[in-house]
Length: 218
Image (spheres, rainbow, N blue to C red):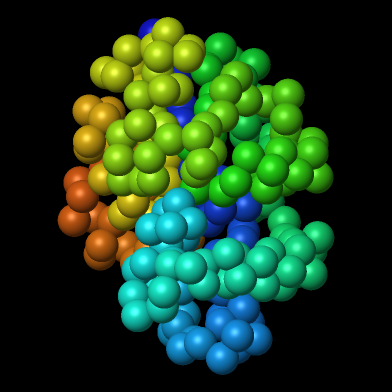
């Protein structure tokens, strides 16, 4: 049987890496350092996947944008302290390598910075797995379709043969805006009911279920 999709595009944080809690805690610590309002877990989780400016505007709407670099600096400090202990979700590396061996094109679309993604790929040993990657500062922020459109063009794929896999509504709305199908990872940052409202092909509750679904449906 032929492959339903040829290009599988993954979000990184909360989809492949179990980093949702680390990101939220780092943002909250940065706000405490600077005497700014500390966002709730729910609010901090919501901005995961957005570009920096959009994320700051959402989570700290009353803060002068001129303060964003200070917040980002403190966030980076706290994130780097916690990041070495942040694992990939169970089975992620094996599943990704198997998908590549089976002939899929694999890509990443993430709100992370290029530097942040390169460090993560180096740490996890996954740099050789992906055919292309797109980061937050290289295109318009999710849910704008720019990152997906760029990856489709770079890899010569068809939108109808592209699948976006992500754990946030930003990922799924980006897929809708780019005219591609999606699968939701409900074990990440955003609640299942919010993800389901955007009508993904499937909504997965555990990482192992995602690898199983891809094996039998992609």
